[in-house]
Image (cartoon, rainbow, N blue to C red; front, side, top):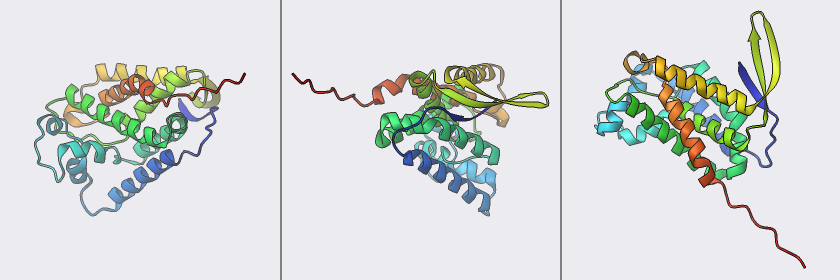
Length: 226
């Protein structure tokens, strides 16, 4: 099941969402053309759980800063493409509701919570975490709360048949987070040999659900005329 757009038009141009997509893409291609080994780059600037919790400074930058650098790094084209697709579909509406400045802060905070959720779940891990998934999970949580009935155009694969359907956001995003919870409980491989940081997704999603109401701008009351 692959969502590719929604029926939820925004009223303002999402230049922050587009800027995030551009920066993530540029960083990925900088990684790709770098003469350094990809694993060495990930270890230098990825968020490593043990260092995040102990604040041990072995990397070129402080562990706290790796929380932010890791949000703009990806492990492959599929990883990048999937994250940027979800950011494009759901990010513009959250930016529209919050405004550009609030959206940037909200996005980064969700990424911070996601990184530390993964670190707390895997405190001794030395596997670097990279990717925007945790921050984007926060956007999904916010979207679920604000636009549960919005329709999402989704590609569904039924064997050899491909079907495009319009599904409620509550179903698409609800199914996504259920998969994250189930996978996080069953898969312990990410902490020892790499894989998907399921608890980063869960932490980011929960952060988005809990924080979105505090970031919404106060609605202006219309003046009364007599």
